[in-house]
Length: 157
Ligand SMILES: [Zn+2]
Figure 1 (cartoon, rainbow, N blue to C red):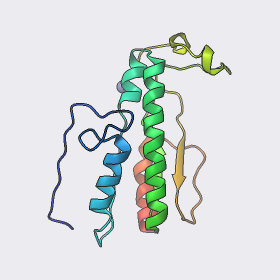
Figure 2 (figure 1 turned 180 degrees about the horizontal axis):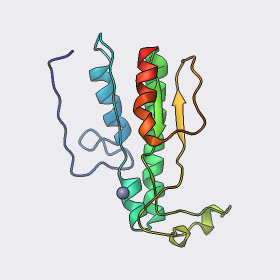
Figure 3 (figure 1 turned 60 degrees about the vertical axis):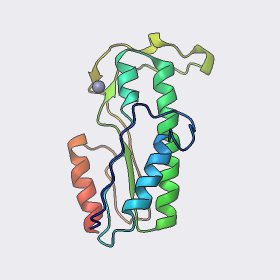
């Protein structure tokens, strides 16, 4: 394991490219992957986009969607990185749903904050996605507490 440690703290992470002084989450993820992917023992990395949750608590759909887009850009960067690296699996999920968002086929212009039905976490199922070259059967539905088991199963392969 590398003895070089890096700590970075930002007051704000911009949603779009802010240059060298203000990296996006996708930039930070790539920088972190550059650092830890060289570890000969392998690596585990977790990336969270917490503002999707924060915006949903206050029923701010525009804000939540902006952070979903930034997170989607991060996922794209990480999946591409993992593909190039090989022997790497990426799992994308959420620990819970927030706001009870009800989508009924609204167009882009019809999206609004009133589509939220609450301001707290809900027990609604959230999707999980697995990217990577791995021969494993994944259950369609799992409890979120089983994500750790899923990671262990993948690492043990
Ligand atoms: Zn929350």
